[in-house]
Length: 240
Image 1 (cartoon, helix red, strand yellow):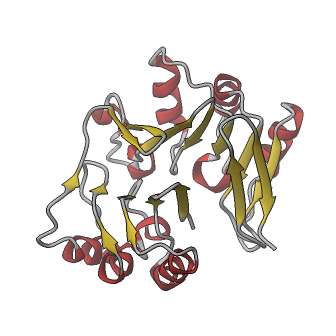
Image 2 (cartoon, one colour; image 1 turned 180 degrees about the horizontal axis):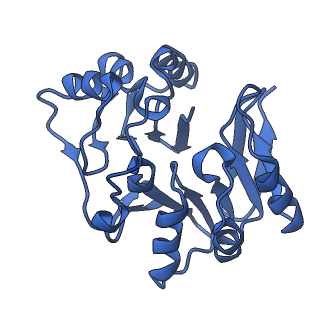
């Protein structure tokens, strides 16, 4: 499951909220960090391991702005989330690139360039509709990829954009895709974080690819991953 907390000075961003039972854990962690309110809550897509805890977060935290992809989910966790948003004044479903500044953070929220090309009636496609988030703090950049798969990666590579980032949150919990070698070459990160568990670890082909490309790997299977950045250097560690 994915749940990422981003903090810079007084700004707090939450990206995804894990499974339904994880909502309480996310809120407890935010409060442990002294967070009274979330400036931006972004749900990348509506799989239960990303949107599951979102309703609990909305019900127990002050949330200034919500952002989510422009499609309708079909799971009960998504319906609970929608119910929790009733009357909220600032909910966006971007269909084009959104650029915004929060404190000293510059964000680019990237929906698919061509969502219709990603919709396949014969298989699940909502992973590819994930909102991809690029965060820049001074000289350093972080790419958070939701659960994107092969077709979305190919679309991103074909866009002509510069995808170079210092750190990547790996797509889809470390699942291997045939386009992943080309995608990682385009991103060229120093470090990769994989949101996975001991029960459902990253695929060995993904780990071997990261090793071959000299990318340091950190996963959440046993401990949370903490990334600290001063704008010039990046330190990654497991929470102790």
